[in-house]
Length: 377
Image 1 (cartoon, rainbow, N blue to C red):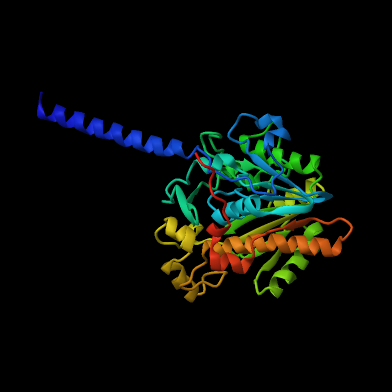
Image 2 (image 1 turned 90 degrees about the vertical axis):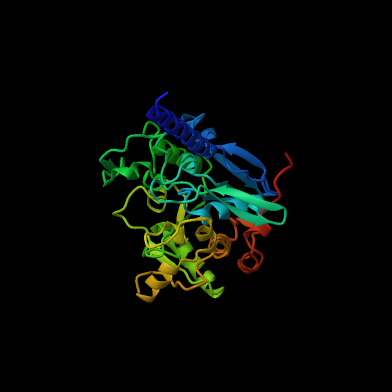
């Protein structure tokens, strides 16, 4: 056998081995993280129970129902709209594994865009997963993509036209769940997921909807609550309550000229009071250095420290960074304050939820202290 033939065979075998390893790694992302059913969970349903059009697809996702002993109003919390925003996903999981409703019903969707958890954003160098240390060992979670996996929806158009408003956006936004509301039953894969969430809200007459997010430190809407006009009073009261706890947060009105987002479309097309919350996540930003699990968890990045000194950021940023405990704590504490504000104004229609992890406890004990042990295999 000639030397060049042997070389070609060796290269081919190497390429096949690399493809097999990469393929196995890619397929492993389709296996969902384990979420432990907490003491307050009364039922686990699927989004397709409200919209059968997504049944059996990667768009179908778990809905954790937590019903109190007494009737009352209801709240829906969306985590994982953008799976590369880990504090949103983890905050939703903490609710599932800890919260105990006493009055009213809490609905939690931890993987709102389930498909987007099965892929990474190309060319971003982001980790596929990260670990949270707990007393019983590490718990692993996916770090996914901002957009629906192209395996489930492709190709992107050159221009994405938002169906109900006619607004033109970049073609890649067609796979962004938070540009797809109110969705369509016969629309794209992503629009069908949005439509399913809207059907849940309408059929269950959900009182308050909270969509959890994170943003890059150079993004102007950060450490903020964005509210639809009809939810502005609730948001204002919440901001005041958080400020009294020394949690600085800004209040932003939902813009009328940017469509497809929860805080605009859910307010326009349903009776719910929609709020969206943002925290500061360096692993999303464009000014970051190495993007690894450490950056996801600690929020420490020397390039953002330099950018802050140059006045390029919209959030304070120093060597302490913005760790996952702070970001999850802001979300969970804000949800508690939303409930407090609602109950003060509506004592005859309460939503009472106990056992929410406190902000200071999350800072001192860490997120892992509030994650339940995984069930034995």
